[in-house]
Amino acid sequence: MPTMFAEIEICIVHLDESRPILLSDVERAQAQEIPDAMRRVRFERTRSALREALASRLGIAAEALEFRRDPAGKPFIINESGCEFSISHSGEWLVIAMSAVPVGIDIETRTPNVEVTKLAARFFSPADAALLNGYPSHERNTHFARQWVAKEAALKAAGVGIAQHLHKAECVLATGGICEVRWVADRMNHFAIRNFTLIDGTPGAVACAEISEIRWRDPVFLSAC
Image (tube, rainbow, N blue to C red; front, side, top):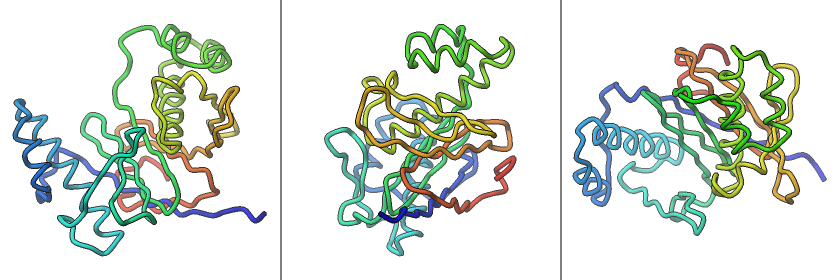
């Protein structure tokens, strides 16, 4: 059976930049229910940026997009089965991944304020917890973040919840970092991982089952492609 090939298009948005507000009536009502002004603005800019990115890819009006969630909670666009997408926002950043096949993306600007080896022992597979413990203590926060974003991106691509499946996700290493997330004692698909770093050092990961090429819309925000 021939190997599938997928292109992933990724947008990087700095949420402190002013953007046109492109929302549905439902989203406008949701925004008005957010009491904190900063959180409300972030919500409006996040949803608007997502609509703008998807509309550009699909060649339709941003306001015409209609979203629903599947039984697992994964969002999708009504009547647009050929466009899969995933988003992640953390701190001042929003990233949006789009592809014709299932895709997941995650970034993490925050550093845990507790010992990461304790978090790994609780939430990671035994092999990944042991892997983290093998690094020098001053490197563990960095490697924990890389494991976390890779696992979360893979779980998003699979369309399953973090709480039920995080401990089943196990990282596979290669030269240059994590190259794959596989499932321990499970028949879920394995996902290839592409790592990236934003210009302020924020780690991120993209997950896709097929061999993929990434097309960055905003490479200026990357420290390296």
